[in-house]
Image (cartoon, rainbow, N blue to C red):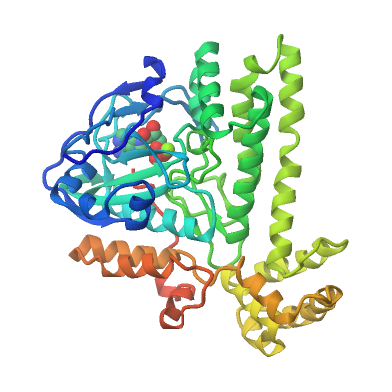
Length: 489
Ligand code: AMP
Ligand code: MG
């Protein structure tokens, strides 16, 4: 039997933190893919994982030695509404492993069968959403955005029922610095379980924030990491789709890839999720929704922050009020880098704002516009290609001289250096929604995994122009556009 070097700290927490149960076996597991590099990083042998025995474990048919399988308890606010009992309804934490960086990582099966937290769900995941999570989470990692990772995926040989019809089932192995969410804190907070909140906070501090000072320090650190994370989302056009508090990581990672997608044409109001009717989780709303979610975290932490309600609220308020400035600092620094400004100067935002407006008015592709702008930093001959992305080419051409004037102020930076530094933050390749759909359709209809594999390969180097895969950089043609992404739950 394959032995993992598990050391399961979450399983040692009090029993009310989780429900212990093994994954539910499936009919006929078959490997989709092992993420070999991540496996090695976690000290696992990729070929063992791909063996019959390995696949049986990845499907939940066999529990690896040293695992202490459990479903985590949590609650959460979904679309603003309080739900007192959520929890892992279709996921099982197998255990924790040390990565090559010495950090402890959760290894969790997702789609591994019902748990006491399943409510009316079947505990399963469909192949499409599993492939989507595999593609997008690994693309986010390659883009440099903190995220849960995907170690492997298998099909189950079973069909599951979803609103689209009967679909092939799959199980994804998710790896995270910790699956504790804002909703985990809310769960104990809502039960007035101050001891539970304290045990959880101490756990999180020891594991994720060893250097912070006290519970106020924890609150501040989580807010800081989240502010940076959301700034990174905004800077690459990532839309999470379901930013509920149960999908908001305390580790500051992107977690729970459901109806997520990247923007093609720049439109701040973009929404993808088929269940997000009010546009609550539109691109432009993400920073303030994160703030709202962090207030829920602060609320759960209140009893630990001071003695007496008034003092507690005062401490929490002072910290939470710093979020907008933290977000803006990260976001504006990132924006400056996207525009090729090495230093912050007065007037930068006044120069950046009209470009964004021209993008929105001219329906320019968000990713390509910044990639072409990087080319224009090196050579004005590229201005034509840049302008061609905009319906309002003239507006962009009129803006460019002002931008060049600003670049010229930083005279020690050569044009080539500047362009390279811009290309290091303005990706050429993102997981375009239509490409993901094509990969899913091929896998679902005929079992053809080639488009999935190609996409994974292309997206592993998103900041490098890959001429042989030039078509993957392009936005969808009108008939390829995907307007909505289903939750797939
Ligand atoms: P999500 O919207 O995917 O973050 O899920 C919200 C809650 O629903 C979590 O508690 C999940 O564990 C649960 N859930 C989602 N899909 C299923 C399913 N197919 N079966 C059981 N529980 C589910
Ligand atoms: Mg979730």
